[in-house]
Length: 379
Ligand SMILES: Cc1cc2nc3c(=O)[nH]c(=O)nc-3n(C[C@H](O)[C@H](O)[C@H](O)COP(=O)(O)OP(=O)(O)OC[C@H]3O[C@@H](n4cnc5c(N)ncnc54)[C@H](O)[C@@H]3O)c2cc1C
Image 1 (cartoon, rainbow, N blue to C red):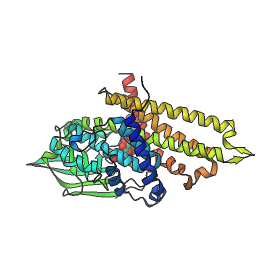
Image 2: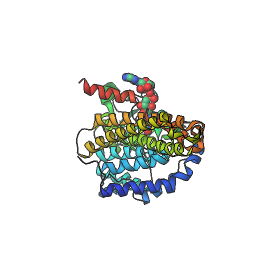
Image 3: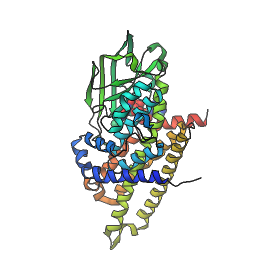
Image 4: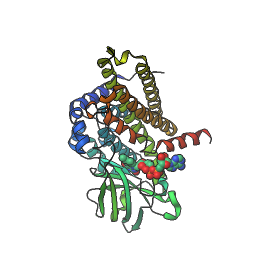
């Protein structure tokens, strides 16, 4: 068993860390207020060769492993987790296209995404289909060479700025989730597709999360991914990989909040000694560091199984559960250990605390992760 990163992985991690510190750090607080998504930084990330790492060279990727991608999500999320999740969700889209799309569909979007010229999104959730995503009722009806799509997807990350969407719709409502079918949709140019309400969120403020509305939208039949009726399985498969990305976002948040707080506790003095010289807050940090390490090991184990071609579905759920719970716990406790300063914007931990909450909700709430894990225990 080897716990060390390879030299190549270390270089990618260092590159991502340098990018985050150079390009993301100075504007992260400002973007949290302005809620503007920095598309120009996606372009720069592409120029650095940090997008599409885990995809083959023939589609413009770099043929690296999945851990390389996870390390980048973690590093970006340490500094600006709204940017980290935009990057990760775009990759969830790409995973779906790569696994289930044909050659033309892959060539249509992957090279542009990897150059940083575009973003992808993944649209499953609807107003009446959240945790029960298999009950999605947006419909696609075939008419000649096209499908006509009607319905509304909600809470779709990146949608307001994305060019491409992996869309899950129902082509046969009588079959329930077995009627779900996946499509590759050009969001900005397809007639009948528009962005609706852009959400005003608690955290990940600069990530653009919005409704996507389909009103007699016309999608060419050759944009269907794989086979009709297989869309739910395709979505769940893409989500397994996506959950490792959300776990990495949570881990990045936890690590960054911990590091900031550690330094603060060394500097800040009360009763004539640093805060870290008090056993109670110091022991809390000991527990938090232990839990961060445990979460990281679970995440990297899930990634390892993914890379080995093993079934990693339950591992992805465990990693998502552990890393996102640790993000919430660490950011909460770190604010407490910093006192009033921790509650203020200047220290960044306040933003991380708000960003951490969503990691327990999206890509399947942590209750749904427990359903998956317990279902596997008692199968
Ligand atoms: C900021 C943000 C970004 C998002 N991005 C995307 C995206 O890019 N693409 C996309 O498709 N979706 C996205 N989502 C949707 C997200 O995946 C859903 O919000 C999530 O799956 C939960 O669905 P819901 O909000 O309808 O909650 P509900 O399903 O209504 O659940 C409410 C509560 O009940 C619990 N619950 C529900 N069913 C059960 C059960 N059987 N057992 C135990 N507890 C249960 C839930 O865990 C939750 O605590 C996003 C959501 C948000 C808020």
